[in-house]
Length: 624
Image (cartoon, rainbow, N blue to C red; front, top):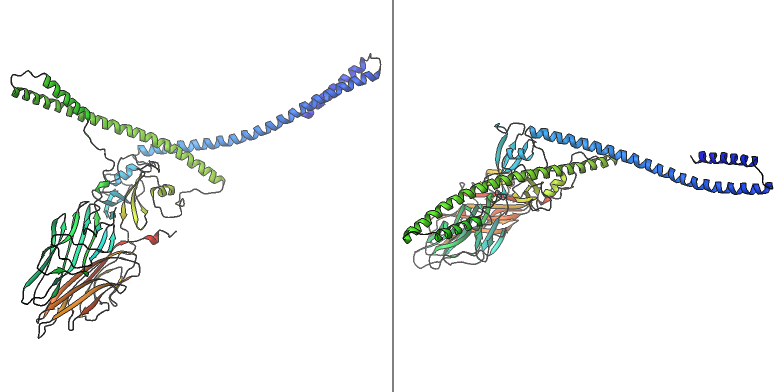
C-alpha cells in the first residue's frame, strides 16, 4: 500500500512539472528550478511521514489479526465446554427423573446413612460392601443398586463392624501385701494401660465409653500357720460403682502356713463414667493378699456402643420464652378480673383459666413448630439444591479447563487414584483421590484403620467436613488358640508342650516346642488354668507348685498351688495377662519351681488360651 501511494505522488510530481514547464513566465530557468526543488522536498517529507504511519498501521493490523484468531479458539473451547455442561445437566435431569442421583453431595439426607436406600439417595450407584450406621454400632451391608429398593436383594446385611473410638486395655499388678477391707486394691504396677482408663493411685478403672467390657482378677491369698487347726479365708470381689458384681473365695483349714489361688472373670455392660474396682470383702485375722506377680487385674473393651454418633445432626428442642410470658400475662389478667365471692372460687376460676390457656398455647405452639420445621426443611432443600448446582457448574468448569490444559500438554487425566502417593488418611485425601459422595469411609490412622464420616458438601475447613467415628478392628493375621496338656509334666524352667490342640487359628502356637510366636505386633490376651498334684506323705509337710507365663523367657505373671497335708491332694491355679507384643516375641508357660514329687496334673485339667486383641498396623502406613 505504501508503494502504491509513492507511485501516485511521483506521477503527480511529473504532472506538476509538465504544467510548470508549459506556463513558465519567470525571468529565468534557475528560479523555476529552485521552486521546483522546494516543492519536491516538501512532498518527499510528507510522503515519508505518511509511509511511517502506514507501516505502524500494518503492524497493528497484524497484531489484531493474531488476537482475533486466539479469541476464536477460546470461543470455540467455551462453546464445547458449554455444550458438555448442557449435556451433563441433561443426563442429571434424566437420572433424577429415573430416581437415580449421582451428584457429588449427600444433602439428599440430613444424617449419616443407615441403609442402602440412604446410600442410593446420597448418590451411590455402584454395587458393593458399604458401612452404615446401625442402632448401636457400625454395620456392614452389601448393596445391589441394580435392584429396586423394595426387592429382597437390594440390601444384604453382613454384620456388625468392630469400631472403637477409645481402645482400652490394661494389665496391672500389686507390688506389696494388701489387707484392707472394703477399699479399692491399688494395683500400682502397670504392665499395660492403653487408653489410661485405670488409675493406679485410686485403684479404679473408669469406663471411657459406653459398651461391653471384660475383666479378670487372679490372685493368691496368704494363710499363716496356727497351733491348732482353724479355718482361714479371704473373699475378693469386683465392684461396679460400689456394687458387688462377682466374688472369689480362698480358704484353708490346716496348721501350717499356705497359699491359695482365687480367680474370677466377668463381662459387663458399662455406661461411660462407670467405675470398676477390686476389693477385699472378707478377711480372717492375719490373712493377706499376696503381692508381686501373683495378683493380677486385667480388663479391656470388647464392643463400644456408638449411639452418640447417631444423633449428631438432630435439632435440640427447647422451651420458648413467649409461652412463659403468655402464661404470666394470663395469670395477671385472671388475678385482676377476680370478682368471685370467696377465695376458693377465685382459685378455681384462676386454675380453669390457666388450664385452658395452657392447652391453647401448647396446641398453637405445636402447630407453629411443625410449620416452622417444614419451612426450614424446604428452605434447606432449596438452598442445598442451589448450592449443589453452583458447585457442580464451578467444578465442571475447573475439570474441563484442567483437561483441556492437560491434553495440550500431553497429560492424561482419566479416572485414577494417583492424586496422592499414599493411603488416604483423611476425608481431604479421599477428596483429592476423587471421592465426592458422602458416607462412612475407612482411612489409615496412626496405628490402626479408622472410620470417618465425610460430608463432601462442606468446605474442607468446616467442622462438619469430617466426623471421626473410631478405630476399626482390622487384623492381617487373626490368632486364636486353645491347647491342653494330656501327659504328666514335671520339668522346671522349660516351656510346657501342650500336646492337644483344640484351636490354632493362624498356627502361631507350636505344640512341639510349647511356644507361641506373635505373628504381628499388637495387644494379646493369655490365660492359663490348671491343677497341681501333690502326693501323700507319712508326715505333715508343705508341698508347693509355682508356674508362670514368660515373654522371651522373662516372667510376666505367676500362680501358685500348695498343700500342707499328709494326704494326696490336687489344687487348682489360674492367672491371666494382657501384653503388648512385637512381631516375633515368644510366649510360653513354664514351671518356676515345685516340691519333690509334685507335678502338673494330666487328663486335660491344664489349659492354655490366647488371642490377638488389636493389631498395630503401622507397617502398612509406609508401604508406598
